[in-house]
Length: 155
Image (cartoon, rainbow, N blue to C red; front, top):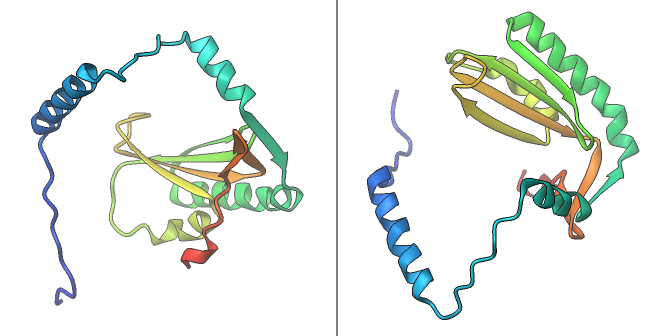
């Protein structure tokens, strides 16, 4: 084995980050332009999100959703992952929960079909939860496309 590339970046401690945040907050609070808006109750906050959100059905994506769900189920059953699949208003969400392991190449087929991937630790009683989202609707917020992202230019 030989190293082809290696680079390490400095990572501040939580104490350093908290100190920086406190200093930044002091600077902001002393600014004449600083005007804090009152914190909205959750119901108002949620209402604002919903009112500014537009969903547009993507028929070609609806057809692919069943293949995504089927592959997610097959992967779950074959590797015996704890799995939750939810149909949300804009997407299908698959969550796999498991304890850490080595090579996870077996997840590549289902990851390739997903539009979004998130990693979580310490939930559902497992070390890792991977959430995969497959969008069946285009999601716009204030007229700006949020999901699904067109990442084809990156590959």
